[in-house]
Each structure stands twice: as structure tokens, then as C-alpha cells.
Amino acid sequence: MKVVIFCGGLGTRFNNGSPGPLKPLIMINGKTILERIMDLYKNLSNVEFILLGGYKFMELKKFCKNFKNSQN
Image (cartoon, rainbow, N blue to C red; front, side, top):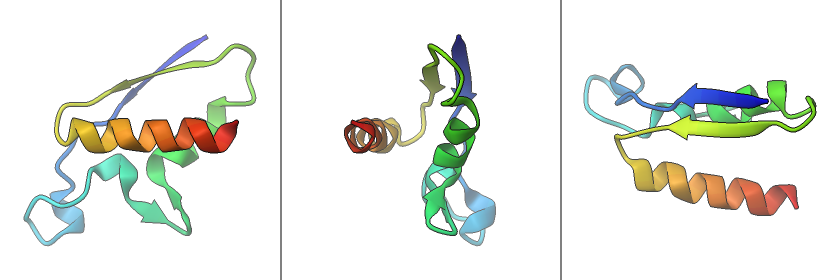
């Protein structure tokens, strides 16, 4: 199953109106918002995550690489 997650957004509400961290990578109780969303789906069989991003895409790419390494 393919799961598409939109990872855009400047996160301005989290940083007093100025661009801050990528919204899906904001930490809440030790986990990012993106990790929490992925945890909801990872127990299903054959899950393929498709992350759509634009703003700070390299930050998202770095997170994905670290997340994948931590899962193995």
C-alpha cells in the first residue's frame, strides 16, 4: 500500500510568524510529527511512504535517511 504524506508548510505558527523548522519535523514528546504519522501506518503490510515536500526538502531527505537507518 502506498501512503502519500504532504510535508510542506513553513511552520510560521510555531515560530512567531517567521519561517521555522519544517512543520513535519517539529518534535512533540520526543517524536516528530512525521514519525507519529508514519507509526500509524507502518504495521500494515507492504507500506511504501511517499513524502511530498518542497520547502527545506534537504532537511526532509536527511530525516528520511536517518529514519530508515534507525529502523534497520
